Length: 197
Image 1 (cartoon, rainbow, N blue to C red):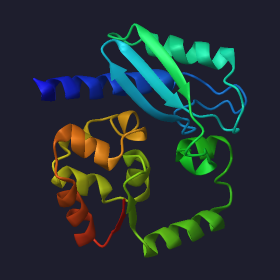
Image 2: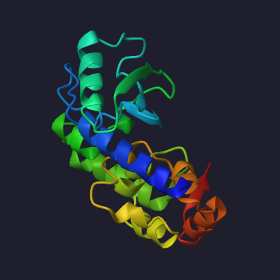
Image 3: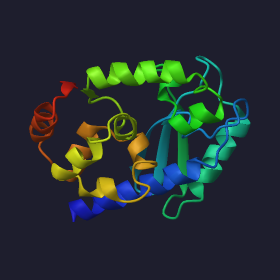
Image 4: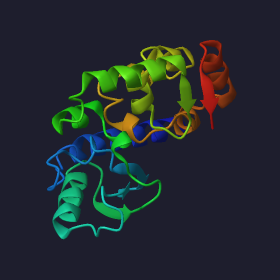
């Protein structure tokens, strides 16, 4: 019963993240999910609490943006109340943006710079447990398969990484799926990764 509840919550978060992709930041003209502004979604009964930040620290959440977020969240079946919590930590940086957002804003124009970043990343494979799984999957081609082999079979569901994966970290996922965190650590270490908690 508890497992069904957890799975239903994961699916609800998934649907909320998909709905939030329609909310466009008025200044940057990129949706708030691809900008990496959504830090978490908590569901209690039929109420969803969205934890988010803004690109400029201390900037108040405009009523327009708040309305759009609430409208998007309330459009999801099973949710009839939405609370938006503004948080300033961890501080937002362009690193939180997806490749799609960076491309849209013309931030990947210098191929030499990108190749340099890629070379550095290949030398040192690091799995940071505080980083959302979507970002890790974008960085490391073998990430999804390692997670799948550890028991995260849902990771291969189409769209899961682009929705829940943007807020789900490895420890959160392990807790939801009842998978031993040490088993995951060992699996990554065996593949040459350094694990940071």
